[in-house]
Image (cartoon, rainbow, N blue to C red):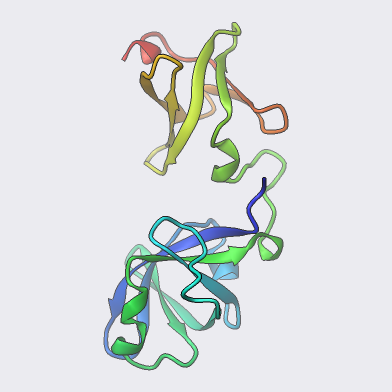
Length: 178
């Protein structure tokens, strides 16, 4: 089942006294997602739509700050008015987001995919995707319960087939022995 909304940012805390929120963007399209007038929904601490906040937050302005953005929403003009959003997520409807390019996928599409080597040896299922530098990491759990962290990099990941539920990898020697 495809989600109707995707997490696009994590609100870490209020910033200053004028009702701004420091948001850690979780999207490659920051300017589009946090554009003036955009309606964003509040997610809970697990990244699900929060029924306590059925009304969307309307972006009044956004400006870069450190490695994130400062988000100002309409109708919230002081720190006390935005304090309740700390440590929550902001979400946008999938239908309003730029679709991934031909060779791209959303992270949620990777979850649950079977990972196999080019030789056809089953490795396990993707449980989580970690955003790290220089490459994201796939947490893959084997049937025996062992966990592998596999870099989501071209030199290792040779094919991602979301429709057939499979990721084909060419692991360097020793990667699956760790």
